[in-house]
Length: 88
Image 1 (cartoon, one colour):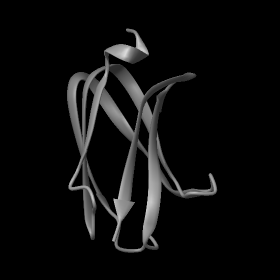
Image 2 (tube, one colour; image 1 turned 180 degrees about the vertical axis):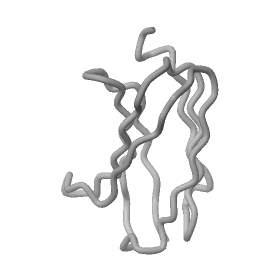
Image 3 (cartoon, rainbow, N blue to C red; image 1 turned 90 degrees about the horizontal axis):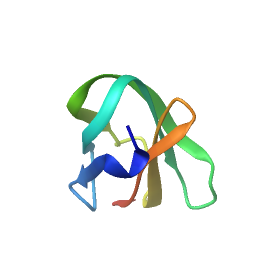
Image 4 (cartoon, one colour; image 1 turned 45 degrees about the vertical axis):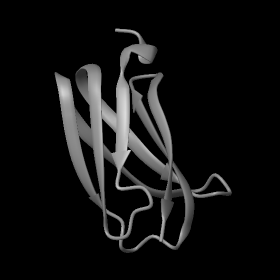
């Protein structure tokens, strides 16, 4: 598994209440996700158990302040995806 092989999509963008995350190409194991605000602070975080192949996750974003965020996915010590999104 190579980090560049994973395909990450987030939608809708901009988001209001629910962000959908689709990850294709991740290996088996635990995936940690973090949403970082513009200053780099963790606004939300969680984990996803990956069985390989395509993974989908729905995250409630209603509690986030409006602004720009970075979604970062990590599996073990390796970053496997990073996407920017905007919360309205």
